[in-house]
Length: 133
Image (cartoon, rainbow, N blue to C red; front, side):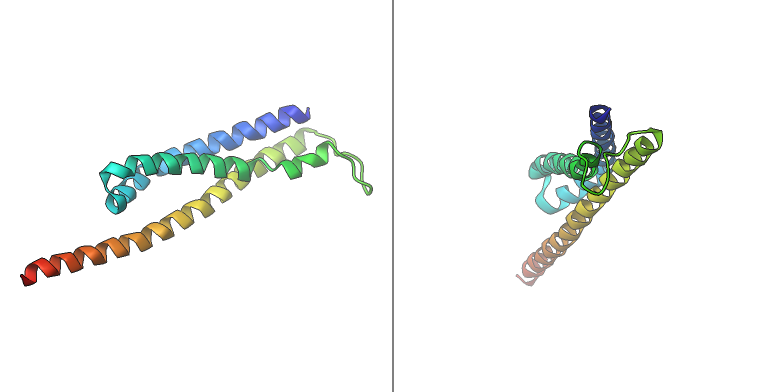
């Protein structure tokens, strides 16, 4: 039963991360094309999609939490995997996956905003320089 739960949480986390990566794909492509150019944007987008999958799965499949179904502690016995616990673990996997991806995307968009401001400032400076000549 534990292995089925492990596989189920892995599948839920992978599916959630994949759908989320597809959801952000066009926005990420536009941002990267503006910041790094069309030549590098596709490679960076693929890397970011991979990072979303890794962060989503590592955040969603919490092995240290699933250990409570395998090992008994001194205070309590091993927990039983019943329907309510399955529902709770699947829901927790979904939420933790989305939460991990949300933090990662927040950091990406903050870095992209800073990069955009820098690129824009350079463009304005370059444009003003050519107007002065």
